[in-house]
Length: 125
Image 1 (cartoon, rainbow, N blue to C red):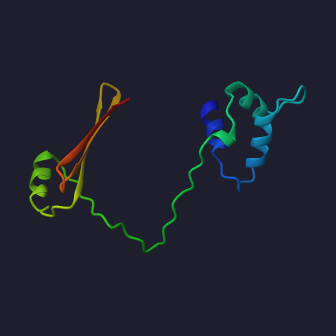
Image 2: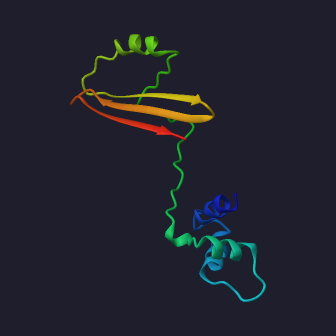
């Protein structure tokens, strides 16, 4: 939990009020009067300047995506829904998630109708 919390602190943008404090704590380890941030930085050897910060995307309240999303109840309904897609230049993504024996699994297939290519990914945790 400490590693996750410190990693999250390292990803704060430069405009955040804590960014300077975290950067200074990661650069040097004082001999006396350690802060918890000093201990975490020394223990995990994470530097905020070596971690990529991804700024959140901002959208207006009236923004709508250009793609459509369809969630079906089962695979038979997905087969029926496939019949209405006639565009030859479309990209489709089929996904499935499961919870088996206390673990989580997910599978996804990205299918590009225009050139017939597909990419498959399988992930389990």
